[in-house]
Image (cartoon, rainbow, N blue to C red; front, side, top):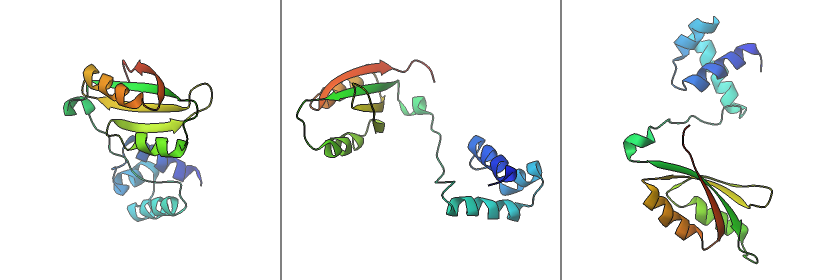
Length: 136
């Protein structure tokens, strides 16, 4: 990967839908040359995919929170628990972490009542600590 590839990546990070022609104008290559480089980075696994940025407030999401979970002592099948939590519609990400906590969940909720209902569902797996996101 050279400096041109890095510049292409930086532009795609800002706008993944930027045209190859515009990227090429910015860094001095043709659109086909940009396309070839992007395909090569995809083939090599450098670019794994493209994401959609959504305005969650316009979809009725008022509350976002990080929730850490300390799983109940003796709970078996940690990977099954992880799969169950990841399958919940509110969960945006669920990661195993080190330290006293076992999991860190990022969840999106319609309002605080929705968050409370989610926490009640999650409590079957262990004790939770919640931090509501005030600003991104």
